[in-house]
Length: 101
Image (tube, rainbow, N blue to C red; front, side, top):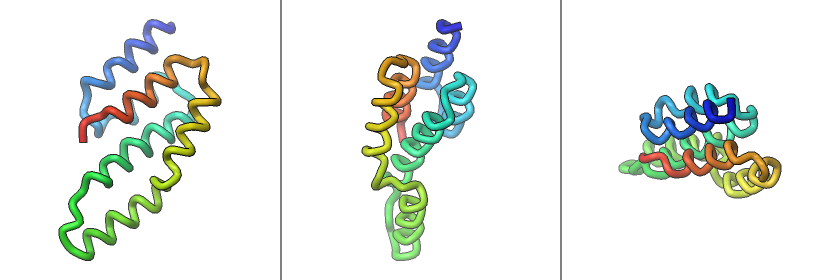
């Protein structure tokens, strides 16, 4: 079973970011980890968006505030500590941070 979970997580690197949450959920990671990895993906997406005018800048700022992107580092640290002996969880977090945007 552990090999299957690891294989699923490794497949995440080869898939588009849009299917990331579905695939990480299929790996049966805890809900708090799924929430964090989805926030990492979404915050990185919005951080890379171009604020080409005031309405777009406001849209980006609103999304990043709703996602609590300013707390992401702190939240990640807590999850990493909580699951420090769970290699699959740590790999899922690392993979979320390395998705192309």
